[in-house]
Length: 206
Image (cartoon, rainbow, N blue to C red):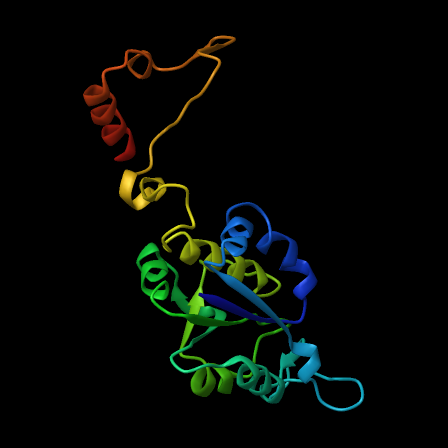
């Protein structure tokens, strides 16, 4: 699977993509990252990518022309193009599973006051939001979705059972058994795997 990330700040996210789980998956050639610098598709001598909003208002808006060119430079048949937006559909685990079925994902990272609405309406296949909060741009959401989707691909994690939607989410402990006044729950030290499974299931339900 290839993640094509269109951004004005590729250097801001590059290190994370090549580290830890994602970096190992990249070395195994399970996933691939293609960072697309939107500035390269900017207009004129100064590679301008933004302009003032029609109707007035603060800030600048990312223009449609450079975004369209950037998408065209990477788009492949059956690729899914996603715009990160505060007005997008909230990203859930089921979306990570759904997107993991594509060979190519194209992420558009907005900046400034946003991206010309025609990108959302005519160029992107869907808009995604990470929650009810505002960030400076789409780079962090792109990283989060990249990691969530990558975890669904066979071979990315050490074991299939590592997926939290398979094993559930529950409190975990390791050595030392006692740290000051804080102790590991006795049930985890007894070796009774059936009871441990029941305890974890109960704790996971919260």
